[in-house]
Image (tube, rainbow, N blue to C red; front, side, top):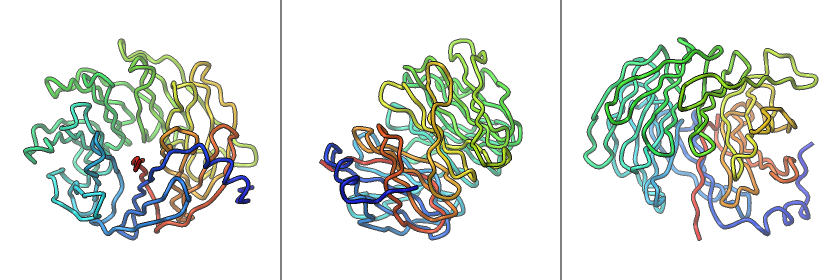
Length: 320
């Protein structure tokens, strides 16, 4: 049960740093801004059609939004909510990742089976890389040398050399891969498979599979346990994994690859992000149209925050 008592909220938020969680709402064409102190929506801004992926520049002065049905990546001033300009993105941009150089966006184009690389300063496409069918997940290694695209229908993770902008490896994963992340200083690369119901872990140096994690939520049919977005705690000790229509988030030990806990959240949990000190986790719940706030230390949901229709992506921005 989600507890929203004042005492519980005060206990959780007193140590949290000031900041905001920005959430894209697919059906409303908006982003909702949540205060990580008050745990309330404080602003709502209009975007292009069907906003999904969302990320900030390194200095948090610019917000990038995948406006999927507008076929553009929009650049917003987060201080005013004004759309400054659009970037070329290819057809149906769904998810993207910003290179550590703070300049190049790697964008998954679901309808065209390509990854588009855009220079955010010149506002030009610098490369388009053929990948598998229905690309979605994107990740980049901490050193910036490798980008990953996952393709939902081909069931692969595609490894891209960011210097040559060419594929150098393709690795099979289970059905319908959704999200990818590099962890442990880039030594490992994790991929979630929505229909396969698993997380696959790869050795970055060799692209060899190191392990696979499955999930079993008591009282929930296995077909509804669908891992999608996931994020890591400080030090990469644990992963919090959104399990889609199971309405749960799993807590995975990143050393042993064992599932330690499940947390009940809103309906069809999709993506998530932490506040600044990673004491709170905010999950986007598409069907229930809300964001669940999780106390990370206690592994408990403490509040639901109503946002727009079909919230999808989430990104943190400090304000202090």
